[in-house]
Length: 79
Image (cartoon, rainbow, N blue to C red):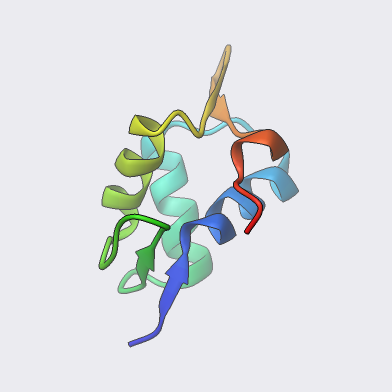
């Protein structure tokens, strides 16, 4: 199974320009990449959608908004 870099999720969030909750982001990830998709980051691997969202939140990759959170271009490492 191919693993998708977590950056793809952050770029998806930027493209939608929406606010998310944990549940709506997990649903959006599963809708776009499939419910069985696996993700990796620079320091983690074999994450499902919920684990990826938890990981990104713990790393400060989200920006709070009144109705949830989004991300910013400055939250995506450039490598």
